[in-house]
Image (cartoon, rainbow, N blue to C red):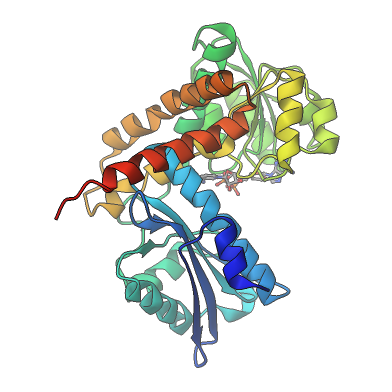
Length: 354
Ligand code: NAD
């Protein structure tokens, strides 16, 4: 692998390899861009087949974080860390503390948090060695309700764009996944008068949604083809693909799942089909907004956090405006919104100031 060529491709700043033989730690921290501020991105543990695969994943995810963090309108850059190995076998206090010491060594250039296979308990070990981390239970805690609220605002922005009104009352929303985000989202939508069609892996939760939220439960594969105003993917990525895209009968897609488009060309197809795609990393940015107080060393303030998450509505409207201005699909417009903000701030930062 030609590492520098790889870094040049999307202008990555730094790639750090962390090794500690005694704890067995093998970790990679990728810092993509710190124009806006310290680079934030969670740590995941994954049993990569090859080291190249781990590097590719860290780089790809770090770049994604730059765009997501920039689109939120906050002063943070993008990074990601991966720890290589089977999460069932490698986890130990020493491993997380060793990782924490590497994070501490970056002196705030990188701020970490939970991601796949890393739990709150694991984070508490990292925290013994560094304060450059977010999302601890005693600070901002579980981001999911704030993420759900942000998705709710993104759905309103989509409805406004299409129907000229934010009103959710009487609109049909199909939710894929009733987990930490999907469930509170379903509650918010129900309170606002939406008709819900839902699916999730466990039948008990579907039954609960039918009973408590008046939802209609459908099978896992049926959700794509239901007639609805909004399809809200809140389960997993790559669900807008060659097979699902044929079935969609929604007018808007807005959900929390990361990387919803299997390939970028699926964003073009949605555009051609006249389905308004509210880009995933804009609509699900409530999770990042939730940890801002942690980053700035402030006491967590729920009210202010929700007020910030409500601005996801404006960010979505801005994406739609750029899409119209440049005559491009919304997924490209979101990238442009993020790039324009980074370029503007880079310019501001060139003003001399001691
Ligand atoms: P979760 O694990 O709590 O919930 C996921 C739900 O999806 C589960 O209830 C599961 O039964 C269901 N599910 C899994 N596969 C499914 C399938 N094929 N069809 C239908 N349902 C299926 O996860 P979460 O925290 O709610 O996150 C949901 C998505 O949002 C993920 O993609 C996550 O990366 C993304 N996201 C979450 C946050 C957050 O704050 N939690 C922030 C940003 C993005």
